Length: 41
Image 1 (cartoon, rainbow, N blue to C red):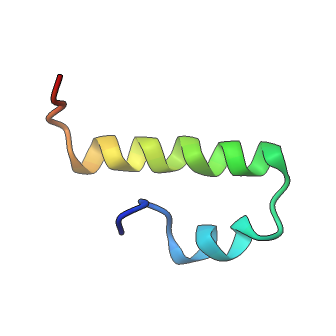
Image 2 (cartoon, one colour; image 1 turned 135 degrees about the horizontal axis):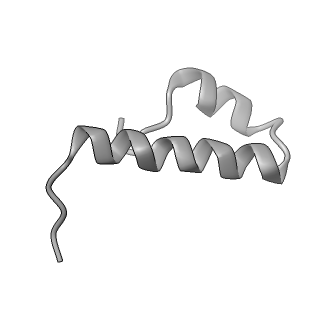
């Protein structure tokens, strides 16, 4: 869970185009923020 990607996102990463990769990264960032609501500096 270190990268916050799901198993499907990890698998899809290898065939994803740049737009899909950016979408996955946005989802990961949102997932990270939901799981760790406290932000440091």
